[in-house]
Image (tube, rainbow, N blue to C red):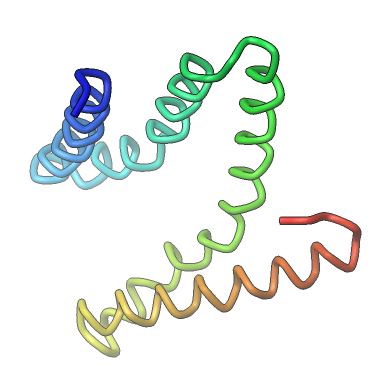
Length: 119
């Protein structure tokens, strides 16, 4: 395993740990940190750093373009999870949220294709 890969793992684990520790202190601040696109920005930096100079701009632009579209079907999960949890408990809410998100992803792809977007 290369040093770069180990650094990626440590950075990713550090962000998740930071957010989960912050939630213990403040639900609102923890949610704010979780909502920030840390993973997207870090991934963007790695893609930029690791891509060949001649494809770097296109790779990073494509990455951000797809993130925009793929975020959309995840948004209802955040609103509905609390209700799902009241009805079905924590693990039921996780399952229902995952299923809802998969259905919305499929719907997004179908609708996007009708408008000529390939996702």
